[in-house]
Image 1 (spheres, rainbow, N blue to C red):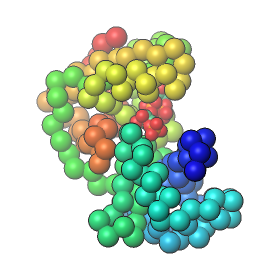
Image 2: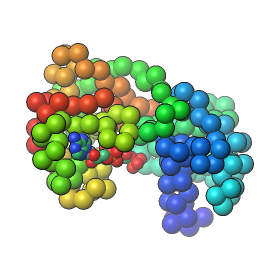
Image 3: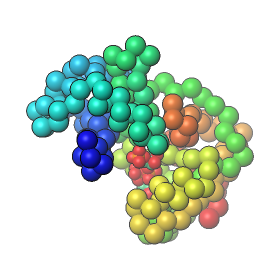
Length: 181
Ligand code: HQG
């Protein structure tokens, strides 16, 4: 499969497994898992000819490890980034490092420095442990800017942090007082 088709297939999987499984009549369980056979069968409606090998290749090729396969290979889920109300993953709580990073675009800065970071359409605010990843995330939205989040201080004040299967850090919101530009 050429690179472009591969990227398109990966985007489609992200859309279905994070946001709108109902558009192909797929149901996710509360932990975000989809049945592989059902996903393959129902994706045909939108013209996607998946098979298990292709899905496995997409999972393995994702540098961000966007998707997780169940150990028996029968189920797949997106590791993070959900907006679907079908999904409410019980992520394990974890103490964060002193600093975490959030990549955004300069055009959002005034709002963020006023009201803090909000999950917007997703369930959580997404943070990374390294600055480079945050730059890449910011680039998706425009001219990137990396915000430093006083994560450990937040945690000490009772804010909860989680880490997804792929290492991305999640929290429900970040008040502006914990954000440094
Ligand atoms: C911004 C990607 C105005 C926020 C990444 C971000 C990540 C505000 C945008 C994952 C705001 C939401 C998530 C406020 C936050 N006012 N704007 N108060 N608070 N924002 O895409 O974090 O490549 O929903 O800064 O790697 O960019 O898809 O979130 O710019 O892990 O696998 O609102 O998605 O992964 O944008 O990205 P998004 P995100 P994938």
